[in-house]
Length: 88
Image (cartoon, rainbow, N blue to C red; front, side, top):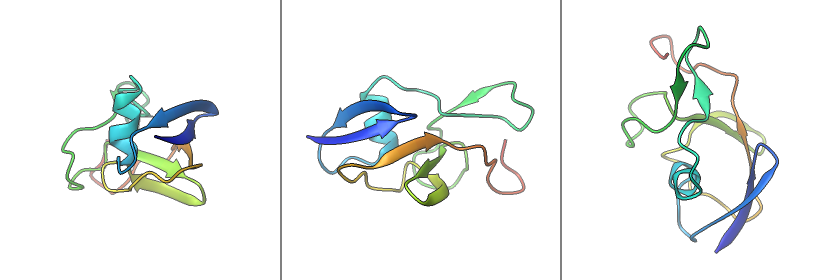
């Protein structure tokens, strides 16, 4: 198991999990909102085609959680970015 934080909350995940997989494993199903702040977003396509799963990880801003392997000690945060021009 590896340890990480999400918005300051300590969590654990299986080694080799993506950020999205680790968040889902911890019961977190949404970590971004649409441009107008109306609807929660989390994992949608799971293969990096959309921008629904954006998070900030360490110094990286607005990365797709479904593509980033989680590292022990990562600090994952809700991103205030909306992704590409068609996102959200």
